[in-house]
Every structure is written in structure tokens, then in C-alpha cells.
Length: 398
Image (cartoon, rainbow, N blue to C red; front, side, top):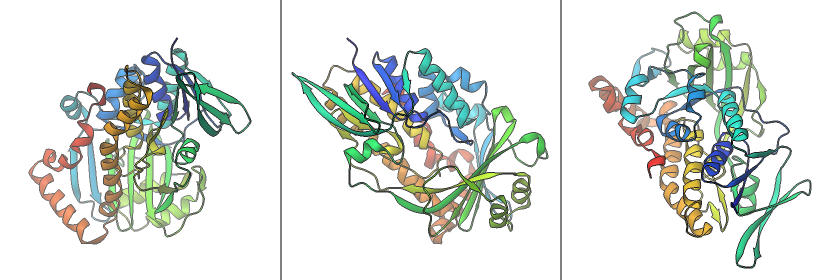
């Protein structure tokens, strides 16, 4: 009889984990607390390390058909437009890492994963918010009993907490864990490309850096839409929601002294959302016997290396690999954490340190930018070395 896994959370990390587990022969139930499966209206960058997994999961063809393939990743000064970095993407990065780098709308990625999950026989239950879990013994067999807030109960061999930064599973596993406001808020929005001058947004991953703020723009949906993320430092933020309506006028005012390409782009944006960026220090415990955390539940990271979703996708594939071996489930989950901890923590710390670089904070940022400028002038490949360890990793080969 196939072993059963409950995945708490029906987002990108949860669904990709469910697919990886299903490929290994597990019976999988996804519990999603919301009353409908949906994603925020924003873009996402999928680098080769994430695409290796999505190729293995059999969803890459569907993603490619609705994605946009950027030519370069650029970093520019907020006033002068001076280019500190121009890292090749497109065909060159695909040839280097044997997987593409693409931009896609989060809702499109989520829809593809959802349809694949249903096709593979994965059960998805909505309005199912986890309240607590406990381990029970059935003879020599360990099971996990999961109780929902509405009183329903489920039993499984493995429980995976893929329920995000405010994970209910994590609260049970680490009741004293806490989140902290990182001092950053982010606006997000999309607009139709046809409403914007043709050359205003380059076909790249465009990053503009400035004092206490930065802005990212890139195409999604085959170039039909432009995704915008604008980050600004704030001292306080108390709202924990992801979908707080933002004030476009306030956003424009925050960037009104920036390069004309930035101000003109924001001038075309009609609506946006605003949310606070929260995080925590690296957790040293992701596993409790037959229960494990993945993604933001165990290593929430600032979106300053575009790796939040990619790390969750990698986590899920790695977890499925270890729990499908002949060893004890608890040992398998411990090996999952052992394999993932150093890498996820390194990326998490890199994302945090990039905040100072992107926001021109302190002498270290000036030194890094000068070095980046020199390396970029010599060879864009040299300038991309600090991030190469992320893209070069292929968890499907381990």
C-alpha cells in the first residue's frame, strides 16, 4: 500500500512538492486554507535551478508556451542610468546550465501546477486550515494526525508544511518562532505592453538601484504584459496581508526623482498593491519526526535574488527523493534538511545583503558596485560569478 503525504499549502511550493511526491508513488492530499486556489497578480523569475525541477515534473512545455525569455539581467543607476551589470541570459544561460531562464506570471505558473496535480491524481481540498498535528503509534508504525480548525481530522505518514511564511505547521513545530518586519515594503503591479512605448522597457530583467529603494521591471505572458516590483525602506509596517491596495500616486511620488524611463513607466501604471516584507533568522529545525517544512515556512527570504519560489521548488523535489528511499521516514526527512540547509541559508543571507547593495547603503555598497562595474567592463561572465552557485545547482542530479 502506498504511503500517504499531506501537503499543507496549495501555492507554488506546495503543488510542486505534491507533484514530486506523486512521481515517487505517494498518495498525496493538498490542504489549502483559502476557498479558491489563486496567486497574486505579479510576475516571477524562474532561473535554471528551478527549471531543472519543473522539467522533471513534466510541466516545462506548458510554462514555456506562456513565458517570456529575457536577453539580459541589467542593473542601472537610478539617476544616470549607468549600467553596472549586463549579465547574459537567453540562449547563453540555457547553454551554460542546460535549462532556460524565464519570466512568467505567477497565476500562470500556479495554474499549470494545479492542472498537472489534478491530472496526476492528487487530491486538493480547499477551506482546510491546519490547526495542529500530533504523532501517533499504530503498532510499530508512526502516523501523523492532522486536525483542521473546523474539526476535520486526517491521518498520514508524512506531513509537509508548505504553507508559507506564516505557516500553521511551523507554529506547531516551533511554537516560539516569530517573524520580524524587515524594514521594506513592496509595490507590485502589471500593465499591458501595448499601452507603453515600445522601447521604454528593454527585453531584460531590469533592475534600477537607488537610495533606500529599487525597482524591477520585466515582461511576462510572452511580452504582452509588464511586471513591476518597486521596493522602498520603511520604519514600520503592521499589515500582514499580501493584497493591500496601493496608492499609485504615492508610488510615483516615491520615485519621482528617478530616471525618466522609471517615472514614465510608473506613469502608465493604473493600479498596484502594497505589502510589507517580513522574515526571520535562519531556522535550525525544519523537521519533527514525520513532519517537515519547506520554502518560506523554514527559510523566508527577501525577494532580492528572485529565489524564493525556486528554493521551495528545490526543497520539494529533495524532500520527495529522501522520503522515497528505503530508510526510515524520520531519517529521510533529517537527510532532506541536511542537504538543503546550507544552500537555502546561503541564498537567504545573500538576499538580505543585496538590500544594502540595491539601496546604496554604506561604504560596502559603493565598494561592491565599483568592483561590479570593473568586472562587468572586463567580462559580464565575471560579474555574474557571485550568483553562479545558485543557477548552476541541479537538485535533480543529487
